[in-house]
Image (cartoon, rainbow, N blue to C red; front, side, top):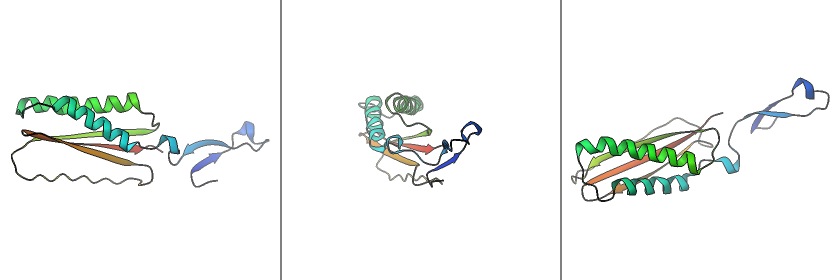
Length: 137
């Protein structure tokens, strides 16, 4: 058995010794988290939804949901990454000149799980969006 995959023999194939893969421990090279492409999607959708906008408490609720839904849909439509689950987190605030700290912490497999994020700012608001990709074993 290899480190990458757990295998087993099916009863039909025990005579021939054929090994059938039934469980993948990590994604193959073409199925990995595509951080740079996802970052482009984040940047594109944040720009589309926020360009020219002025911070308004009532509108922010809608904008954050639209950004998260748009990014999630674009990832599913444009990318093929089987067995990945995505979490899209959007934080939007008013640009007042005060500092803001954004911190995320996760416990995951560093070899197969990943994340990417991007920031949008204008004179009225800022938006930090992060996409976490977790590979399901």
